[in-house]
Length: 342
Image 1 (tube, rainbow, N blue to C red):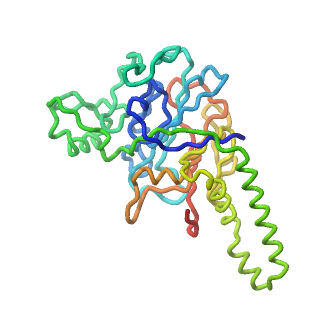
Image 2: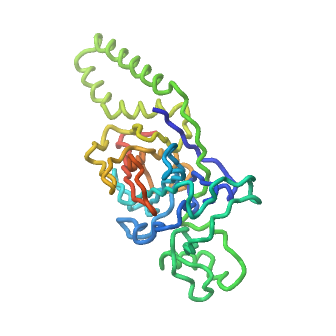
């Protein structure tokens, strides 16, 4: 099964807008369709009930399936560190949007030119008002200038304190990239994982197992017991994770629709019954996972509590059923065991 790796790269702002169908991290979501766009309370953290922040989106059309000619998955997460508990995904949500080639928002063919002066424009048929702070639907307008809208009182207060108090009623526009609720924005550049990486990893594991078996013949019983304590199944899974990612240590995403995740631990691995079916009744299958390396680019490190994960595995409808808006999909959060370190 082919695996496509994702890496963060700097990009021009126009490259990350909806008409370019981007895969990206941070900033505001580049919505695909503009019908039934996720909004509050659907975008609230299940723990603190505050609006979640946009984490990333993956453009993943399905070849040969007309209804999925354009297709993107959007992942949101809470920015409150205290909402993160071990192996609990209550502070995260993922949505799927897809469009046929003939749709109300984008031309049938791509534009002839590329660049900020040739930027394809979304057809103005929606009139959807978006929150200035997070880019999600918001109809609450500033009562003084009526030029900016918000999804919630929380984001209106945040923007007022950040810059709008000084700018309200003026022609100045604040730099929304500096808003504290947004993650740093990057393009998600992709490339196929080198063929043979999995085979090489399996060969290394076989060699290590052979070495252990050879050593067991010469070790005393007490030494064998000590080895067994350290060579747990959990450490084997973690070492496999490290070997598999060693060739491309900066990968932040692994995409393999209908493939298998690369787990960081043998603990808290979902069984088939842990993955709920889609609302259409079809089974959900693995599509992509977010790697812990992404945390290095998000600038979330702090003393004490911090946003954290081992890996985030996203499962989507196996038939990518038709949806006229945004369909909620399933996310499984797995954390490192206490003795593991990257």
